[in-house]
Length: 243
Image (cartoon, rainbow, N blue to C red):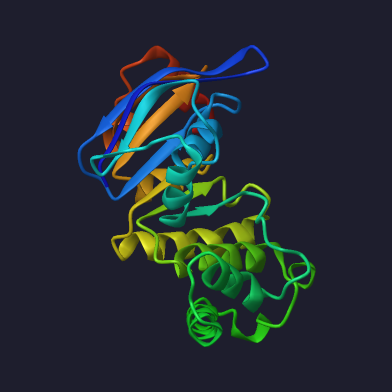
């Protein structure tokens, strides 16, 4: 993955959430976005996903500039798999149907082909016995694993994870993190917003610490976690790594 952000800004109701964020990554499989709550991580991820419009600035992914016009954004969204903290599954559909629906309606796969892809993914992620269940009948970990299976079913160029374990208990968190690590070990490119510092340190090639709408620090995971250069970074990491 190659990523370039140039002076990206975004405000909501007069509050500047992102303040001229710039970042250049030449080569990485995994970028972890960390930092205090409310610092702008999720907003930046949603802009990269094509779900929010920036007020200013430019974004390039793999040397291709994002164009924030609806037709271009529709194409972009089809190439990105996004997993949200609240699962975002269709409550009236089964686990199997939650995976097949985007394949059929957005990516023009036949019903048979979509079904084959979905069943293979359910089997791979130990969800096969739950394919006919609706989200309310699944545990939180199972729901998030279905959401991840749906995201990779479309064979995206880039996976985006927004706090994928924030709604889960510790056991379910480990389930989902194992699944994400497996995808990382396959060499897939993804950007991960997380408060799981140990996991970020383990899987990320690059880390960007976002605070107060700006990137306080960025670089290789080892450098950011072990030798932070910025005082804001040192304060944040001292707190979250204390226990």
